[in-house]
Amino acid sequence: MSRFTLRLAIALQAAISAGDGLAMIALANRVYQSSHASWAVAAVFLALTVPITTLAPVAGLLLDRLPTKSVLVAAAAVAAAVALGLAVASGVPATLSLALCFGVCAAILQPGLGAIVPRLAGDTAITRANSYLQAATWAGFSAGPLLAGLLISTVGSGAAFGADAALYALGAAGLWALRLAPRRSVPGGEHDAGARPRLSAELRAGFGFLRSDPEAAMLVGTVGAVIACANMAVVAEVVFAEHVLQAGPGGYSLLVAGWTAGMVAGTLAGGRLPVRWLVPAALIGTVATGAGVALAGAAVALWQAVVAYGFGGLASGAETVATRSVLNHRAPQDVAGRVFALYSGVLFGATSLAMAVAGALLTVLGARTVLIVAGSGGMLAGAAGCVGMALRQRTRHDPAPAGDG
Image (tube, rainbow, N blue to C red; front, top):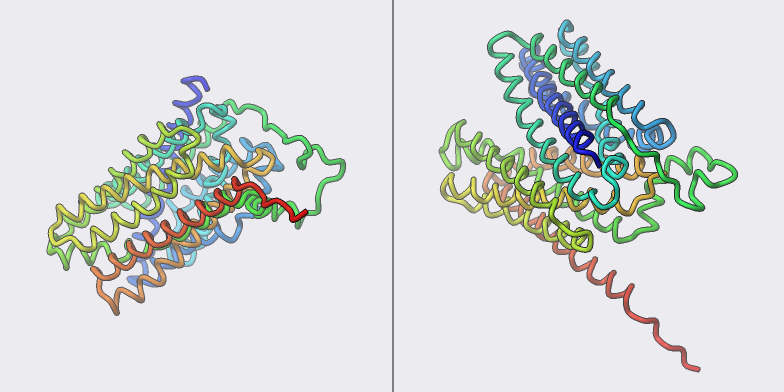
């Protein structure tokens, strides 16, 4: 992996992630100012996330069957065009329609950027590359909303969407300039077969990989469950910081900043993990992520909650790098796009479901209890994954019992 290739990949990852964060805030602001209805804001988030889950098989197949770089460049370029359309559009229906187009682009970009890491890095540098790229993701996603707030408050939403278009255009240009190693086929794999499988079988190839690798399947399922629990806390954070801890809007900002800072630190630390420790580190990270959320819910002062969130973010960042690196090492490149599309679909589907459930729980249980329940649920899910993985590995390594005769 050349230094230029890595730096370019980091820069384009940061630009695309900043575009995602900017778009999310600018879209929510646009529809709320147009309708003053909370349902419209919820519809924006659904438009941005539902396609990532529902289109996962199709998006993954496009990434695996067409030139990957061309598909990614096209998705980023379309996202730039959508942002330009939003700069001149008005009204809730038009905004939601274009937000759905953003979601479709994200359904391709999210898994595609994960699937190409081995072709950028080479086998020996996968974990380190994921570390840098995920740190860039979180840095960009944190900067995007700040830029959106500045532009909307000083110039207007049109300028914010114009800046968003520029970020996606930079991402497209960076993707076009990337030099990807050729996709390696596995002997006996899909590309070596005499006849191509049916379309239905190709769409299910991501599931097929998880069936063939129960450890990877167990890891993806555990991470999905913990992400669902952790995202239940997102709905309660603002109420917890501003009203339970009496810290006001500034306190809420510090709470979110604590998690984000922890994520960046955790992703960088995760790059030092040796390959043999990736699976254990990912599972331990899931337990620690839940613990961070639960400890924050039990806090009686803002600084305690910020420290707990920093710890949870640190664990989550390390887990993210470890999980993505496991999939990069284990998934054949012939199906990597579909595997990462399935992984993204699980995460975003879990997030959407968790936020819907948390909204109902918040009115019944209160913010502090929701955080404690969410964190405890994440700890339990992570612990279950650890136990299941230990049993799986013990069964795999135990010799078969001898026959009676």
